[in-house]
Image (cartoon, rainbow, N blue to C red; front, side, top):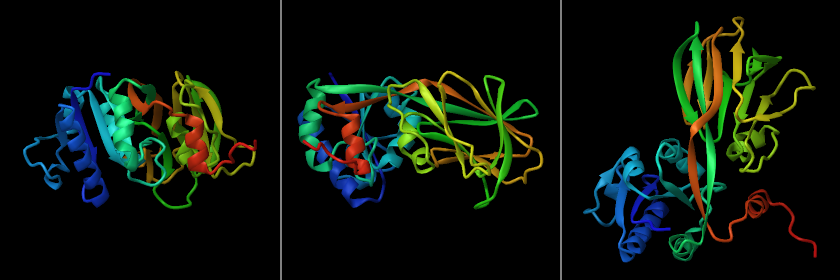
Length: 291
């Protein structure tokens, strides 16, 4: 793969991230790459001559973006970069690192593989959500991991109905609902008892949050469906939609929330030898081979 222009993105004010980014600058300069630094971290790095750019500019100009940080840093960048024809790779400076799978101590070796074409490129789809009031769109956004309908108060139930492609599925009293992508199936959805979905599957999962009926279970549906959540008018007025736990959209009683697959996809790059099941074993402490 011929990466000539590379964007560098990282969490500001984090010493280990700064060290990794400075190492990446040296690596990329040796390869003769043009470097674009995300503007919020430019002043923290050792080369002040490299210009700062926002995520949209990086998406438009770069062939590859390297995100240094945890999965949260990757999610924030991915929601923007997925709109552009750019590959994205993550260096893990966070905790779990399901999306940022390059270890900081192996940057040179792993990036050498990627720059030499020994890489795997996965397409991960996103979700789009819209909040409708009296059939008019009031707010919208996108998510890589999940869209969550929840109450603004802790441990507070709500009532809502679920429709899939305008077909009634069920009504529910619960703390809310998680609609997750395969990428997000190992995030908040997993903590709520949802299934792990392989990234290649064109599916999304609906996971009730603390439902009032024991028969409520997660449902896996076709990702090309439209999921509608119709909020009962008997609810209080402090409901919310969150996107990847980063963006919050207000919801009023009587609103309808529509979730569907985005046309944008995230081109996620892994070095040769990457295995999704190896990631699961390492991150979730699954057992190794017996023999």
